[in-house]
Length: 100
Image (cartoon, rainbow, N blue to C red):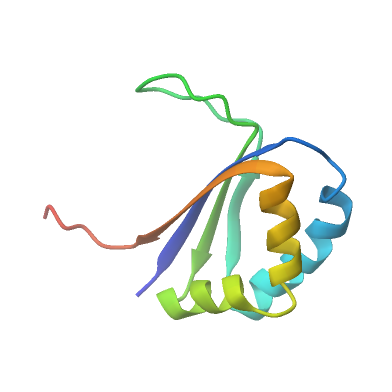
């Protein structure tokens, strides 16, 4: 079953970004992930206003694929840099409808 990573990322410094993008792109693909959106073009339609610089949506073939990406030894140092240099929230969502 597919899973989706939904991230809100607001950099607090940009020193990590140049070294992050290429390895992250390759590792997402290595684990079967596909970026569906990575953009600063987003609009909040409901709820209390949350200022977020980037919204990112990644489709994964499985939960294991997403979790394996997160703990990949090639990604871990980049994850540490991203989380140290940004305010980030990452949600992993199963592609199912519990209300149907």
